[in-house]
Length: 540
Image 1 (cartoon, helix red, strand yellow):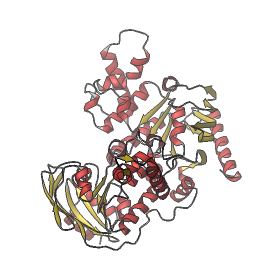
Image 2 (spheres, one colour):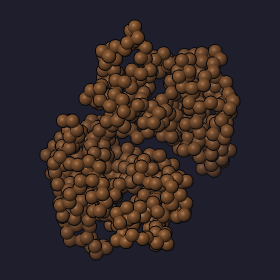
Image 3 (cartoon, one colour):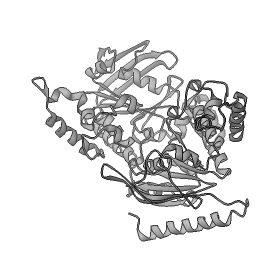
Image 4 (cartoon, one colour):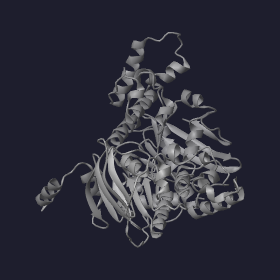
């Protein structure tokens, strides 16, 4: 709950900016749009997700909406975009009350959403131009016949305004993920959007693709559109956003100009406490070699990789998108078969053809795509957690439900998984809690090696700390840890050794304490030793 000082400060900010909206911006001579959501409440199965939220956003700004998983930010935006109906409250756009009961209502009012899962909003068999104009075609144009040339012309105009070049004749199914996002964004311009919500759009993008997205967002901002940006990445907030709003436990707790905020303060508001140790590193005794890999190869994705991991050791493998990290993790975890390579577990040669066989010899793989490969979203928390060790609960051919429940409740408590009941379906959990389930189901197996592939992808800063602590506990138990990530700060923070991967190869090794994020980025970007030495010598 916000204290009186915080509430008064928010009220003052809102009052000042609403004055700007009414009187107009003197610099450009236009009035600013205003979105207000007042007293918003929403509950699911009697559990409050939003409690009297007061949210405002302004035209001509990019507003970051932050919060730990489960804070309520996505629920609030789903109400605004028509995916959920509100239980109580009022929504106003430019001083007029609006009523949103479905996504179609939101779109007619000029409220659009660009989701991370772009494929759900596109038709892959249609062309880029047709997908850009899809809403116009779906809701009718007043005529039963639409000229293909007019579709292309309108789509081309939208792309030109965004400053992006898209192949208008190409089928959308053939595009990259970043270009698919641009198709959705172009669609919002065609429909003369007043509000555009970006929900974790950069999570699957490379750094270069993210920069392109930010440039387009700034273009939309400069057109007076209200731009709301949901993200877990704080550096993006300070690089791209004008204002930051923080939610916690279903309430809005902080709103401030980005230039007047600090990362430490935002983290404190998100968590409700100071996050003193962003990367908790547990002391673990390093033992004998658990895993030895030699000559691992799969086409151009993984090219002759050699690797060792010791008991109690956390080995970070970092690289940019396309470096081959996921492919390497899948080979070690048994999800894919290598063209060449040899494995040893505790000095003994082993072979395996799938994840089940890999687990049988001591390798547990926690994949990057948790919803597709790491959990059963339509099953309960109990069923997900107990699945790998189901034999422990089997007696004379029957599964002990009481045993499953007791054990899963203990894991939920140990990992801090937020769920009202272990019988709740995993699909209703936040992303961070889903990831804890994806990891938690392996903690009681007899695995010697844990392969983590981007375990904090799409996870808030609080859940990240819990995951880091869990990994540290596994290392203290003598487990070997392989930690694949594109977040260089995480490897610097928790790894005992860090290996840089680029173009399918391991190009550089560092011990703990002897590397910076800048150095990792240099080698991950195909920098070479001689270039590094030349640059350092030139600087001296």
